[in-house]
Length: 181
Image: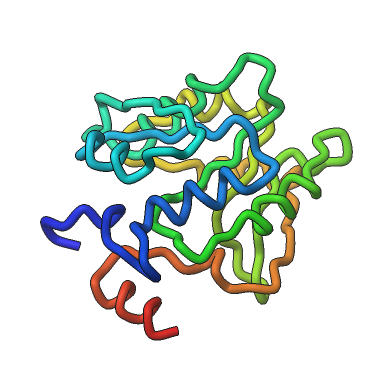
């Protein structure tokens, strides 16, 4: 997206990050922790009035692993898990998150719940707290994708009717395509 902070770009009347956070706030997930980094003040201003906990990641320049760790560290010690949401997916709705929460059951080998649409895995992903130590050990610009491969037997696909779980906004063309749909 060049010099533009894509999280502040508007789609359907509001910033991408606001769509993502409103979906989380409207879901069964609680508490909602928002990890900020680049232009944190502008992101926080965009989220004014929403009941969220802000966790500032001063190491955001070192990669996505630091944001994951900042969010996990901000959770209450009794959190059963965490839904890792991406702020550049404005089509994800509270209902998507609630379906993941409804499917979550570590005792039944559903310790990681991944949304799926037409056989393709998407985001967000619900992780049991059992995996927090491994998330905290990630480094650099490394997300948790490798952990999905490592823990395949407890990864449960949750089919979604909408392809919104596959659409993120990484380029101006992706944003233009999203707004056309």
